Image (cartoon, rainbow, N blue to C red; front, side, top):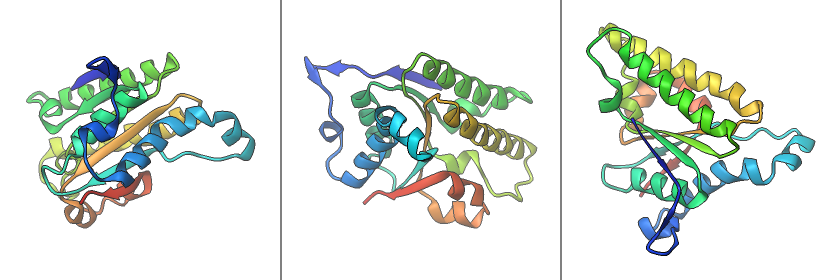
Length: 192
């Protein structure tokens, strides 16, 4: 797990387009997901609008999904917490789940300070394997992740601004895994 804060580079503000050419739809969706709830909080409360809780980026390896998230988060001045399979999977029972809980708690603490906070789950398909997986650790990690993502809904409605963005290059695998829960949480943007 790693964290970073938005900043300027080379004496000028970063723009997402500086890092990723194309995929304008993904850039727009990320900017809106991160900034609109803050920019339009009073209006959305008056109208009873609920903002999406997350975004799923789908595309082949090497299309810039991770780079795009980093660039847009930096551009928006948000805090970024990255969760990858490598950073989560641990040998001892309960350690993987602890790492996930700490990542979500860290993001919430930054949101408590009034700063947008983004949790980026890279390769979510690896963290959420097939439901019929025989590995007990896979089931525990996926259950913990789903629980944390579901509890993020209450964080979002309480005024804290924590956004979950995930990436996968195996959308079909996610669908056949029976991950309807993921579909209910994330809007989807396809990378070209």
